[in-house]
Structures are given as C-alpha cells and as structure tokens.
Length: 286
View 1 (cartoon, one colour):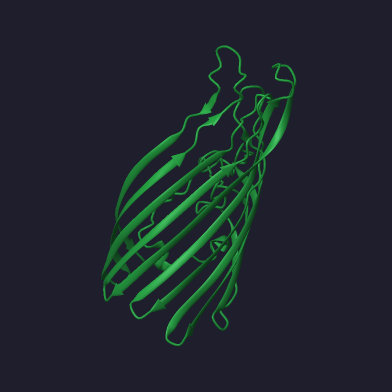
View 2: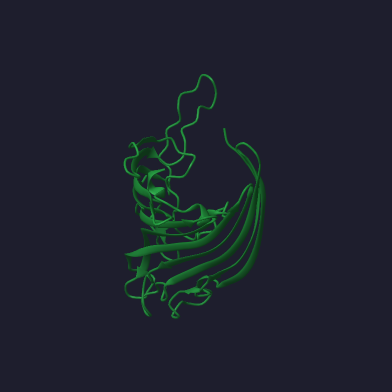
C-alpha cells in the first residue's frame, strides 16, 4: 500500500483495529480489500519507493460461475485511487533509523442527493491524505511515531432569508488529523509495547444565526492508550494480545435558534464516551 509510508513497528504494536474517528467522513478509501496495481522499486542504499492505482474502492465480485464481473457507481465510495510512498532505512552510530511518508488521492464515484431543507450535509468530494513516520531502534528498544492528515469536502443547504423558502448550498471543509507514538521492547521470543493515539476531526459550520444553517462547527476527538505483548512460539508464528483504554468526545451540532415550532434545533447530540478494547490473536507468516 503506497500511501502507508511508514508507521513503525513500535507505534503499531497492539493497534490491530482502526480507532480513528469515522464520523461523516470517508476514511481508508484505498483499503486492504481493493483490487489494485502496485509497483515497488528495488531497495538502494536503504531507500525504497512505491506507487499503486485502484480503479475503484472495494472489489469486483463474480456472483456465480456464469455471471460477469459486477460494475457499480456507488454513492459515497471512491474511485481512481492513487497512492505513492517512500521510506529509508539506515544506521547511525549504533542506532537504527527509518523514515517514510506517503500521499494518496481519490475521486468520488457518485455524489449523494444534494441536501435540501432540514437535512444533514453529505460527502461531495474525493479525499486527499498524506502521512509521515519515523522509527529509532537501539538494542532491544524501538521508539516510533506517525502522523496522518486527511481532507475532504461536504455540502449543506442553508436558508438564505430564514423563510424556509429560499435555499443556497455551502461547501464545508472536513479535516481529520491522526498521530500515534509508541515504544517497543524485544527480548528473544518476547515482544512488549505501549502506544498513545490521538485523532481529531473538524468540519466547518454551514451557516450563522439567521440562515437556518448549522451555527457551530463539528469537532470530535479520540484518545487511546494501548499496551500489548507477543510471544513467538515457532518460525513465523506469534501469539499476541493487547488492552486499550480510550475516550471519544464529540460536541453537539445545533441549527439556527430561529427554527420554527416542532423543530428541535439539534442536528446531532454531544457524545462523551469511554471505552475498553481487548484483542487476542495469532499471527502466522510463511
């Protein structure tokens, strides 16, 4: 996956599931279950680069042995997904160093019906993303960090005159920033690690008081601390487990207070929720 760039083993240890905010925004448009063409350059002096292209998000499936490959134009899914990435691995005075980064872009296959009065904003644009990462290793220890930012756009409808008769559409920028830092320790077959992840999402407000738009922006944030361990019990076979503790917090999104009778003026209520996640599994590689 060219867009991955580099997220170090230390930062990734125990992070087996996606805890990033996924609210009114498309993420991972070039996910693992996607048909793609990829090319990786030979590794030269520790440097390697790659590029990949996917015609569309997801996979084309044959319904049965006689049916042709399915074709679709799904609302909210992406196509023409380009990803490029590069990394460098080296050593300096006994320290192992790894640096990397990536960039991806995609178009929207089909736009949802554009919003009208009293509807939530809809995704109306493709997604661009870039990430950077670094890892430092010394003896049995490794310290890694990664940063990812994603940008897209949504469209909302607002009342021009606050009369519920004349409407205009407004574009809303949607940005999500995710960063993670982790520390790992390896001692023979044993592997230990801990990490901290923070993800923030922000969407513009669609209006101001008097136009019946959403008068405040959407802000959501996830924090997560994970500790994990693994044990290699045979060639290419590892048992691993992790425990994560975190919090998800999202502000309320309100409409113009001049809404008429019977309208509650709230598009989405606030959420403040703690969570605990336990992961146990095995990893077998040939």
